[in-house]
Image (tube, rainbow, N blue to C red):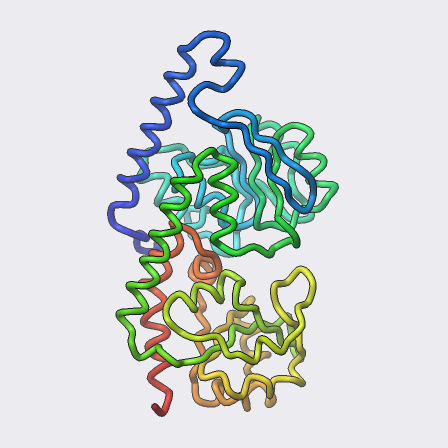
Length: 344
């Protein structure tokens, strides 16, 4: 089943941006040899340092490829539809694409990006065949070996410190910098903050309600995401408060979380709400049938927000100009139900 469009009017705004970008590129291509050598326009070369190296972008990118999560959406919002994106089958709908990406691109009248396998089986040859002039991977898990292979044929921007660890603001800023659109990225960040503020203001009963965002990787396991992890930041943006118990936990490298084990589930006793997700229905059944898990106060009260729609789980796990409005309208009714279980 197709999901509703993420925001009325976003497609027309993107279309205008894409038309403007196309006109700018046409103007550049009609210039002389000097323009062709420099890339034309007002693009100022940038140097970006990150965990896997130093990347120099010396001309305005036209053929962008994105890896990991969230970068494709920001590139689209800044006016450039990538020529290639890492596939995310778990959250895609019947179009084969993440719904907010499909809607944004088709509403703008642009061509959908080619999708390729990522992760440990990253299809580097397919990416090279797309002839990219910029590869964005600031929120990804690419390895040094993969980065070296990619950067041999295109400027590649990786994560600043650890894989899969970046704030949504920093992700958007570095993408804006690499695309020569820092001002536009700052505007998009401000718009997202405004959308969060409006949503929080519409739900005064969320004030003072604490939550933990947890996950599992099978029976007996338990992890807690940290406040800056993007799915937690999404909930914080709506006006809820992260249970301060998270400040006592130690990060498990490369996860933006602490893996504590179900034996320490008592640490969550003071969380008013729990947010989580399950890999499939079997995982849900196994997790919820564990007595220790069932005794967590929020679980016993039914104060758990655990969406089952894979597209929503994916969309609400990252913050960018396309997913935020799409997720907010779906999240609020779920949270309202959980908050209603509290004795306040």
